[in-house]
Image (tube, rainbow, N blue to C red; front, side):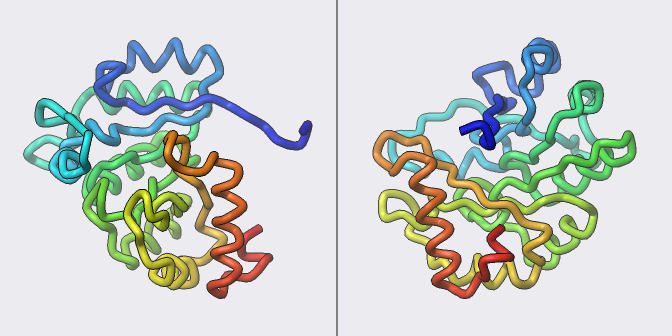
Length: 210
């Protein structure tokens, strides 16, 4: 399917040493296009993720900011790589406070490909308010909405709050993802088909979905 592009991504989690610019740069050279800040390995997400059966996490995780609310030094090294290789920067599972600090620093050096990772989900991070998401959208970030949370194998969320959020934030500031790939769930492509159908059924128009 020549119209479909596939590219690599990386999460800055424990598996590669967390906020590890030395691991990130070789991946960027190989053509990795998207970098997530810590997800399961974020300090913000740790307690919530430990509640999920079968998930075993050690340590306190990684925070992007220090006690004074300033970004830790490693973040600037990561941002320089993102800028150098024109990568997409996603916030992972960090808190709203960390996200605003990260994106403001990113934009200050000319990084404008920004994604808020499933900002409405309550399992992986502190839930953003709709006004925070709208502000991030107005800053130029894309707000990601994912299908996996609606499935009975996962969180069984009601789709209505997401649909209301898309209307409030503006579809032009939003992107769709499946967050699938788990062996017990549908494959990602089928998940996207189901997500499109679910959105259409719940009042999101075809142009908005596109």
